Length: 449
Ligand code: 9WN
Image (spheres, helix red, strand yellow):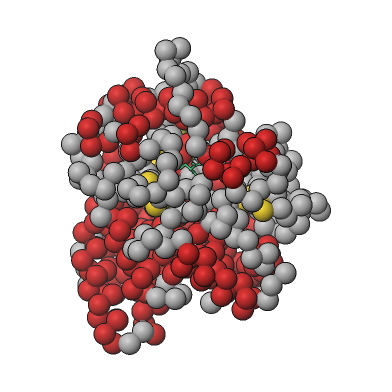
């Protein structure tokens, strides 16, 4: 195990190594492009090193924004090794006039963490010299219309009925691809018998990395082939619908309201409003209105413990699963004190961080007491450092500094292996997935600052 100073130095080194100049790849082999919420976490980490470089990350991402305001989940780098589905498979600019002519992007989104990064950058630049301050503040002002357009897109197109919950079109949009949250909705995704799935790049990229168990070991850490067939089929359906929100919402097999992304969005609205307020920019009241609407939406899904649920919009039914997404109210706040206490007790209980078998007391992506729990397979059990970061951040905001401190310490102990893996086996502490994964290094940097 490394000292904290060594961990911070190594995290900075990893981010430098994954930097392709204004764009940090999510992971060099497995994800050789820019991912949207990864970029936001990367910017949060980079803000500790250079506010200017951190902002550049967001500028690169938003340069790929669609005319609708959507920020795509992948921005493809032309020179990177192949990743599937790549630009040809998405074919965004061929089928949708709203996609930018360049760079090539995917046609879906990811959770809106970006405003949190903007807030961090503005905080960080306070200690920079006057010239950098002027430069960064000027660039935040220049980015402001794009940030507002992103938030307005989410409200207008992803919450058309005013539930205060964001609609998503693919498990990839949640960032938690194969979480048991989506098992029910995916059961309704039936690929056409004529559909030929394409070759997966993920298991091969991972088998080449330093993972235990070779190809079989790496395949066990990823979604299954049956899952992937559905993921690929949804891309096909989205492409056929021209990535048009109204057509997609009418036709797609998978349509879900994502409570975790909605809680992030509520908090993001508030964070962005403070930036707008500080810099005298337009839209502050509107952003606060979004925050109130989405907080109400999230709280409206909670049970007596304050635990939240997604909503299957195709079946009009709550998806009550024991996954980390249930803790969404700790991100947006607003639970009455008694229920917030119960939710914290649940988080600390043996079903979650208090499980006696955990190597580190951070929340597994799925509760070890849930029937769907799998300690190896991706979002079905392993622990994910950026999710810890979000909860730590949320706990601090909810006025729970002790719980935040405990989780921060456990996260840093986990990251002291210096591997900065994408995710970790909750019982053995074994590092899994992409490595070094930029967002794991980024959250270490931020937590250590
Ligand atoms: C699909 C890049 C991304 C993360 C997601 C994570 C994973 C991609 C994949 O990697 O998703 O978007 O190929 O599995 O689930 O959260 O943003 O790190």
